[in-house]
Image 1 (spheres, rainbow, N blue to C red):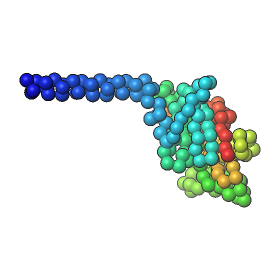
Image 2: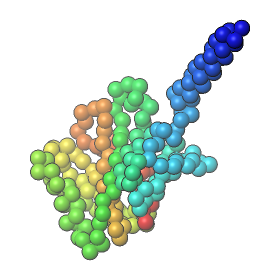
Image 3: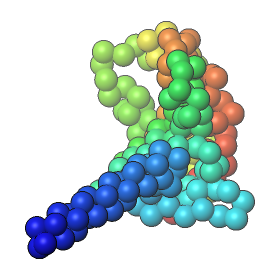
Image 4: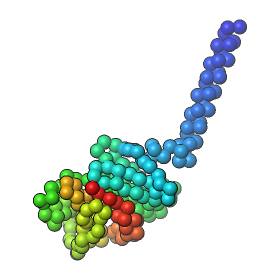
Length: 196
């Protein structure tokens, strides 16, 4: 009789574990595990459906349907995908906007810093076509337009007193001629970025 009760108890425990695992996988598949998609820090959602992120000297809000990856340690890199679900399910071209954070001394010339950053890889052929000052919440910014290895490219650099931010849109799932298709997503990203 004891062998039957232990066997029944073991079977019951296995069923409970299997059900719990199944529920976890279903929740994860349908977005219940949103925190795991946003590795690297707490994510809050506002009433308007905006996801809020913060990191090394910045805060950022993006629409709720964007997928965002943030590094776990220093939070000095963030990647946002406006059309992530569409891109994941097909080979449709979609945008990715990456922002990297660097130390910066306010005594450094902004033009020299940008030139040094863009020209850091000597294997790339870089030609500047224009640059313009732009407004960034909490700091200053420069929008750089040019050619990198012949592809039309727009990059944005934002500056606070001790940080520089490189914001680089790119088109994935397509060998495109530059990142112009990401202009609207870049504007949304910039409008929701605040640096301290």
